[in-house]
Image (tube, rainbow, N blue to C red; front, side, top):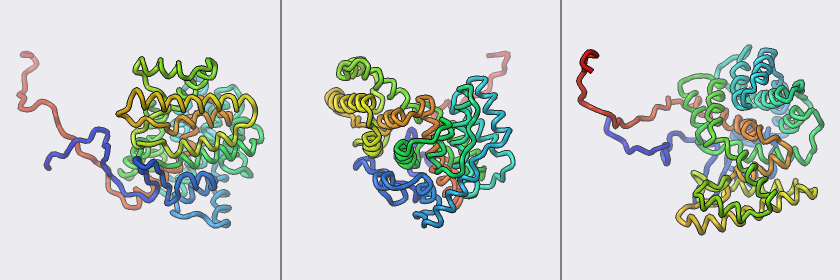
Length: 377
């Protein structure tokens, strides 16, 4: 085989055809199964978004009702999963590690073939694992899922044990739909690569969660919130930003591997946060956020004119989830609650027209070595 051009990180290399989402990084556009993300997020429930990815079209009213019922019926965790989550809570493991453990144990009693049935089970069970573990970490009993609540409302209910506020449900629904799929990102690539070996969906999603655990993929919203809260307390975003840039430190929430313009998902989440912000405390914090973004974009353009450092999805993810009341430590896990829909859809797509994913590497090590006996080394 002739040597290929090495593209670190596989940047610019297409390894799959997909009908699930398309990113135009230059124009700043994201299309999910044919719909601009702005339109889908403004109208769809999470269940409609998952159905769209699985089936390639929006459901009828009857189909949606049946799909919702199927997902709701599969939310419950078995006793072995609860046992693992309780033990993990006693050990104080991270939420993402607990999610990985919970998904692996959730295979007990389930067929492991790659199928929509297993994809639905995973979509249903991930929120329950996250919520149950969080309750155990707080020293509380897990809240059993309710079949009469929608997917998003049930997640909030399991976290708090209280009937969720409709405005918070709608805001979180917007978030879950907005981030449900985003091309062949690291965790999605991992999931497809695992399924390409003819492995099962639970293994694929467990691998995806492992990928998401890395701070370069799923860890930015938490530090963004820390940064914004610090600035809110001082009331001086300009000084904070100048200090960071002078120290050549990264400004979290700005810049993206693909987008050369403002991340279109940031605009969706900004609008959702604005609708949700009502009381004085929230309004004051949101005003700080807007001021920070304005100053940051201006300073970044001046200090780094050769780089397209625009607002990315993590910036308003942090603000929206905080405003909803999602604990900071659950930000990445809540992302997984959404992205499991995209992961499983990609796995099904990979399975339907499979070829094992096996990229080449270019050897740059030593050559022409001869063996030296150990006595002569």
